[in-house]
Length: 386
Image (cartoon, rainbow, N blue to C red; front, side):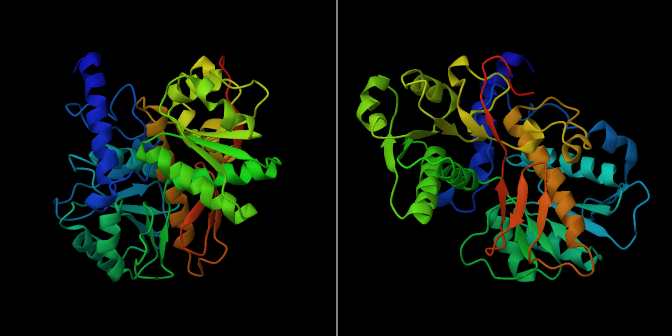
């Protein structure tokens, strides 16, 4: 497939993934930070995403009937730790995302070599049955499903520690064995609010647009800011035009949170005083950031910002070239595996569960969902993300 055609397919492929990660037609919002990229996750006509080199060398996949799980043995593993990985890798809509998560999961398994992974492929109409088959087969921990709809389907049948890869909907059956790890944008919006508060900002301005992702970031920031200080932050919806129109709102603020896509953020930044502190989430971090973003304080995963940290560099990078946004799913797979091993321990309890992860400093909240705390960096024009 030509590069030009791949680029034309990007909005379609990524849009499909973002849409179907939600559970209901009225709430089809992305729960992973995958932005519109210059290329799709992978061409629809190319072979499945290959496993990382380390995983391919250390893991052997036993071919079993399609109705049965596949077992991946990472080196010499303790027989008593068996982790089930439930993902829709054959789905036309979610297959690419699921394959990237699986690649990261298997990379961690090959690196650590401390558990046996049982891969279970699922579809929308059989996720509960596949989950129950894996549990009946003797897994100690289950990881997945990937969608809210899938989580709702398996929640009533949770009998072993289960780490789902999406946010928990209100009303999900409460179980101390059911935990959630996701790349929710709300988590980053809340962290930016805390960061600005810790930096002594008293009058923040949130600039967003009409896009769903932007509105979610704005709302998460506002909720956290009210929790911290008891008042609502100033907010402005900006859909382009002359930045000079923002003068009044900016003059009354001591810091700006830009909940915008990269190009819009660069246009806005050009109209602001260079002395004004500007903050953003990982949404702005790309392989080739625009020069106009220089100086913005942003947060992102240790996987990208702390590449030489021992807990990060021990895991192999993807064998296939991925967009920076898509690679976040690979990192999610790594941390999902590491948490699953912790959850497989005989005396495991959810209370105080933490992990210095490649996707962030993970801490389990009272809502049974992991909150990610990310390192802070400053965007520079001459040092694009690797």
